[in-house]
Image 1: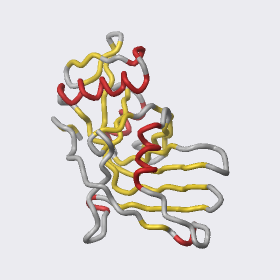
Image 2 (image 1 turned 180 degrees about the horizontal axis):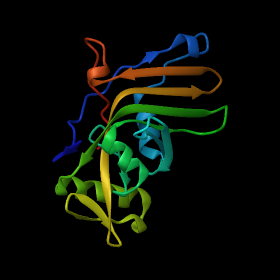
Image 3 (image 1 turned 180 degrees about the vertical axis):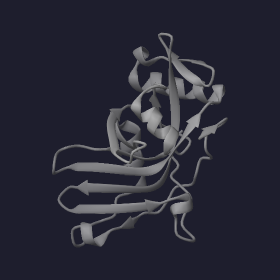
Image 4 (image 1 turned 90 degrees about the vertical axis):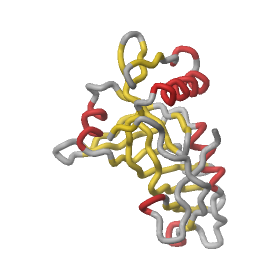
Length: 192
């Protein structure tokens, strides 16, 4: 579950409108809209699985880079212990309103980022997105803040769902990598 470098950045995908969960005549949601929502999200929710099979959900901040969502956790936190046993996760973001909303669900596998150069680049993204109070040093394959380590994980999308609720409702699905049917693109390419 550890890697020296980031997972490879994938190509932009083509999504599938899910008719059973969309309004008649609904227009597909553009991947750029979904990617933008993931990039702008200040808070997302990560779902992991405890060793006994029970779910664990917690809010966290994310940064998008190299086709992945990146998350942090302290080495002794529940999500770090869960990821050590089972790297499969769901990361969600969106809103709790019914109209004029976009919710995004990312299913993927969390891979630990340990390469110091990649971590320094991600630390700068965290600082740019969340401000100077979220400035991290990098040491021993982790972020460090006030002397405490924070593990960094890259979540490479396998399946992404988007639910747009405007005058019409559109449910979309994108499949990537091993989850993709033959001939489908590999994975999303967030802006660098």
